[in-house]
Amino acid sequence: MNFPKGFVWGVATASYQIEGAAREDGKGLSIWDTFCLKEGNIWNGQSGDIACDHYHRYPEDIEIMKQIGVNAYRLSISWSRVLPNGTGKVNPKGMAFYDRLIDQLLEAKITPYVTLFHWDYPEELYCRGGWLNPDSSDWFAEYTKVVVEKLSDRVKNWMTMNEPQVFINHGHHHGTHAPGLKLGTAQLLRTAHNTLLSHGKAVQTIRAYSKSACNVGLAAVGVVFTPATDKPADIAAARQAMFSVTNKDVWNNTWWMDPMLVGKYPEDGLALFGADAPAIREKDMAIIHQPLDFLGLNIYYGQTVRAGKEGQPEIIPDPVGHPITFYHWGVNPQTLYWGPKNFFERYKLPIYITENGMANVDWVALDGKVHDPQRIDFLNRYLLQLFKASKDGADIRGYFQWSLMDNFEWASGYRERFGMVYVDYTTQQRIPKDSAYWYKDVIASNGAAFGK
Image 1 (cartoon, rainbow, N blue to C red):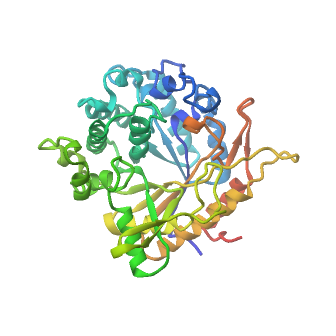
Image 2: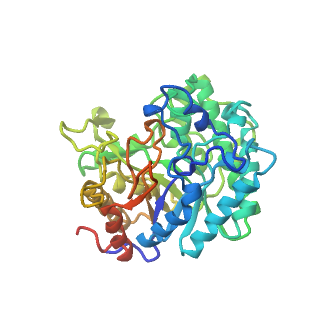
Image 3: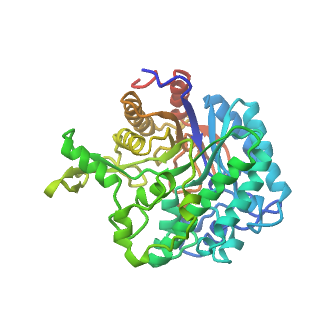
C-alpha cells in the first residue's frame, strides 16, 4: 500500500506556538503577547514568551526533522517580527531569522511550505481596528509583499492564512482566543469579509512578486460530517451538512470557501444572516475569488450524520465511551476519508492535509523515552482513511502532521501535548517520541508501513 509517487510527507508548526523570543531583536507585540497578559485568559497564566525557544534552537529542530525524514515543513511567519508595527519599517533581524531558517531547511532537503498568518496579529494594527478596519486587507498585502520579495527566490509553496474560522470565530465572537472580542453578528461578518479580502490581495501579491514559480493556497478548518451508514441518503445528508450555513456564526465551510473558490457567498448563508451580511463593494468578489493551486485542510475530528425527516441532516452523538483525545475531541478516522473526498468533489482542487494529529498526556518514562502508542494508533487509523480517499479518486498531494513538537496550545497553554517530539519546557530538551520513529518508517516506505 503506497501513496502516489511524489506524495509530500511533512510536519507543521506555527510561529507564536514555538518561537519564543517574544520581545527580542526588535519584534513588535502581537495580540497573543497581550492576550496572555490578562489573568484568566490562558491555562495556569502561561504564555508563548519562551515557548519551545525555536527562535534560538531552530538548527536542532531542523536536524530532528532531518532524522525523521520529513520532506516538507509547514511553518508560519510572525507578522510582528517582520513588521513590528504591522506596516512601515521592516525589522531586519526578524526577517533575517526566516532567511536563515529557509536556507537551513533547504540545505537539509526539506521543502518549506510557508503560512503567512497563523493568528499572531500585530498589536499595533489591532489598536487601529484590526480586521474591522477596511484598510486591514491593504495592511496584509503590504506584509505579504515584504515576505515574498525576501523569500520567494527559495520558497515556492504559500498559504495565505491558517483557519480563519478559528481566529475570527474564537477570537472575535466567543472571546476565548486573542484578541478576546465578543462581537455581534454584523461586526463578526465584517471581520470575516475583510479577512477574505486580505486572502485575495495576498494571493494577488504573491503571484505579482514571486521570484519563482509558486503554488498558492490556504489552510482552512475542514468542518467534516460523516455519514452514519453507506446508504445514499445518509451520504447525501452528511454532504449537505458539510456545505450548509445553519448557525449565526462563521464556523462552517462555505461562508469562507465559496467566496474564495466559487466567487460568491452561499445563498443559504445570505438568507440566514439577512441584514447582518456584510456590504459588498463592486470589486470585492473579484478580489476574493483568486485562482488557487491547492486547498489545505486541517482535520482532527468530525460529527456523524444520518438522513432524518425529509432527508435533512440529523446529527448522531458519539456513543457513551467513544474514544476521545486529551483535548476532548472525538477520535473519528473516517473524517480523513469523507473530508478530503467531499472537498475535492465540490471545489476540484488538489488537497493537502495541512494539519492532523492528537493531543496526548505524554511524559518521559523510566527508560528515558517517550512512549505514545495512542498517537501511533490514531495516526495509523486516520492515514488508512486518507489512503482510501486517495484510492477512491480524491487528488491528495500531501499530509502534514500536527505537530513536529509539543508547543503552546493557545488558551490551553502547555497542558496538551500534540508533538511527535517531546519538549521539556524547563530545560528545552527535545526527545523524539515513539510516534516520530513510526512516522519515519511511514515516510521512508511512502505509506507501506501502515498497519504494522
